[in-house]
Image (cartoon, rainbow, N blue to C red; front, side):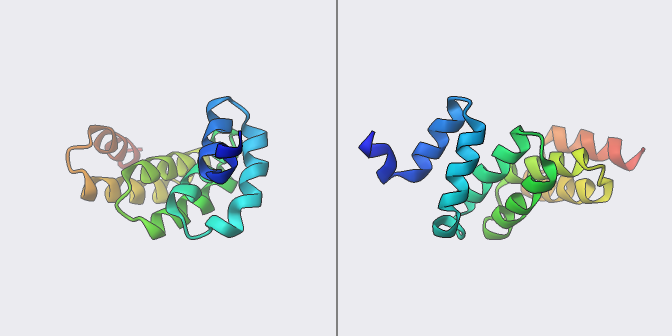
Length: 119
């Protein structure tokens, strides 16, 4: 167990894998000052909030992760979904367009963009 604590992100991922989302969130909040400039950590924290169906709290983490690592499609996908959960259609459209700039063949983003623009 000592090894996990010398690699805090690994321990955080293990909590998530084990379905211990509330514990993971608390653990992650304690790590946040140390990992505030780590896009993967921000993605993980946003994901925990998203899993716990708190898109409002997830979004700032996804936005920070995206600002640090703008070519991460996975972050953009979850950011899009969070915007959709909050009924923020225009922001979801913007995310879809960013995904398509990075992955022009992303059929899911194409389909969603078409659906959003036609609704």
